[in-house]
Image (cartoon, rainbow, N blue to C red; front, side, top):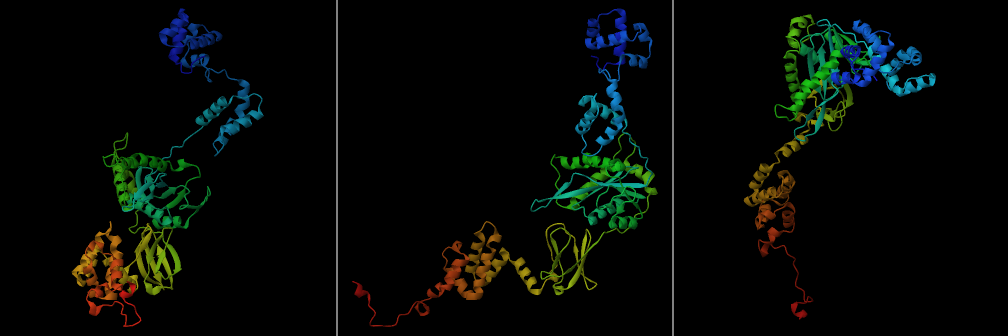
Length: 529
């Protein structure tokens, strides 16, 4: 059987050597052409009714049409081809749909016709047709006309310093298709307020606004999809109106509509992600402990990417942008667009309120407990309003916990907080020293008795509380009675005071032992001889 990889040069060598009468064995040995191929082309040359000399005189195209067949070594089956030909386009279109497989289409094909190709042949024919009819339109972009946005599929990570808990960071990428100038920033949530804050940052980085901003049909962008008249979200409309740009969406399942953005995502993986993974020269993946730290690094790498010379060009993306595109863009406003949410609630007894999906709570002045209030918040700030007056402002947090302003707390809560902050080893030793040196030694021993100082703080508080109950003199006395201060603990000192051990040691006059009055009926020791 003929080899499909046989070149035109090989064909002419075979015909030339056969014309000379050279044996097929020698042709195969000298020119490294298989005997089978030589046999096939000799047979086709003979069946062509042309002499070897006439064949050699023909053009490459003519010789190819005689000796080679479009279906390779397989002789085309005209009946099978005739039956399949009208359905090829339909089958190719159906196979482009989601979840449709070759097996399903082939089974249907076999039930319709008596003469059918094998599964492999059928698959090759449909694939060849699809490749031959897969046309791509090359978009020509106008400077300053369009910006495209997309999210990278792979996230980056932020690790909290104390707990080492990993938080996912989503990466938004934006590109100006004409100059291919790129921008990227990370966010810990893709909710409206964070997404549009990232989009605003991209315009500030590009130092201008394009006539059109395009993205796919993400929920932040499109409320209801329609190819010709989609319903955009209120936030998208507000953002576009604020910056004076037109919002557009791509067709569903047509990623080529924003090809530059799709391409940029891959470039970000290869350029930015690769450098983060490789570390700063040590091969260790870079670790980021805050969103600000991650975004600073992203901006550094994006600047580096934009200022590097493009492959096959004599200029960088930034140079092309400055020379041809920057002056064609609309000016960007000085104040960034912020998308705000509102939440109405009644201030509860904890005088804190939670917003969004994160479990973080923000304080409100305790005087407004049980009153109606409103929280107005964006990605950076939380404001609390009561009776049309702003009563609190907080920085928006993404971590679990509480943001409490001391002035918002009742006096007794502030006092408790103050005492809690004061309670440390130095505080306890200072208080104990005011009672006496023995009490200070006992407190020192208690502090040293635990692996961590904080574990002994409650015991120290308990010992000092005995001063209020029994007095400083008695507490100092029982502490002095401890032969080894390392045996000091709250329960031992408490029991000694409750049992009046310190009073018993002061002599008979202060003895608090039991008193038995004289009674003749009471037997003495002699009665038990």
